[in-house]
Image (cartoon, rainbow, N blue to C red):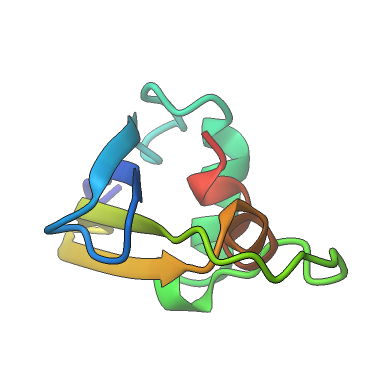
Length: 107
């Protein structure tokens, strides 16, 4: 197995550089799911389903969200399948985060 070790964060704000961190977890997916993520099996399954492409994650697409702007920015940094990754994305609020990113950033 190629190495997998990620640090995932959720922060309040529009960019990781200026946002206030709220939560951070570690996630490893090989050889077995683990880390401090509360649901490593589900998070690893989601990442495997999209070949580690964070931008392709899909959460609960059928969930309706209110249109209140309260931005959260998520980041992922580390190694996925032996390749360095760095990802950042801003969501309009916590509902859109869950709707669009699913279990990977559910912590």
